[in-house]
Length: 300
Image 1: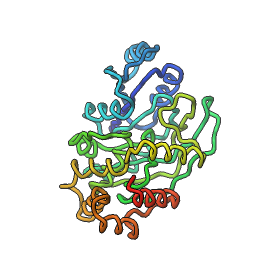
Image 2: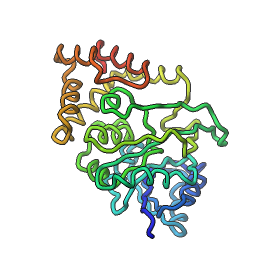
Image 3: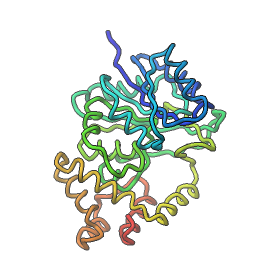
Image 4: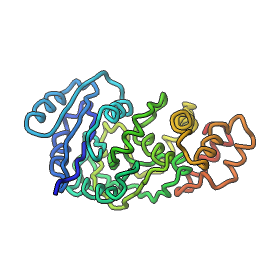
């Protein structure tokens, strides 16, 4: 009986310190036919030499390009990849447990004919893989929550070819992070989405993380405040991209909610419906509160 094929998509950038340990954990995945597609985002350390060496001995293909940052680099991988049953994002500095991919595939296999996405809880560790207190999530898996709460970890995601094709149909002009976009699109188009509360990844926290996940209210609120100061309108701009790319394939409910978010600053009716309705209900009350305050202030 043939194994399900999974292409692991990894973007590297000056990752020589932890890369070998992560690659070894990916090679050790159980009960799947696993290969890697790596895009190097303009490294200046020994990362490229490591990739050249790894390609000689393992199922790893890599290419390089100009430095675009993690979001665009991972997105290039999504649009470049093809030919697998499933795809998984991988950071360059984590460690995967041996059952990570087989667990995801088992959850997705019965939905292979429709777009489908899996993600799981992370176990935070320090640079030496010592356990840290982790941010526990219990997502509602609703489109409304996705528009207000950006929590999903791309390094835990596994998705099928049907979703990859749907993603590749539209490249957003605004792309804060690839994982947030993939999750939002999946829920916008009515994909099968499942969450596994069991960690299958050691999510390493160190001084060079592109995105961290420290379990600290100060850390989370400081980041929110920075976004407010920058006036970035992350959630509004993401909704605008979802409207441009996928409005025609959304359910009527998702299309109407997207329309309200896109127009909330121009339409008092839309703003009041978002503030007093339950469409943006969120599993994290503080996030729902901050989101609705942002709507009131016009900075959503």
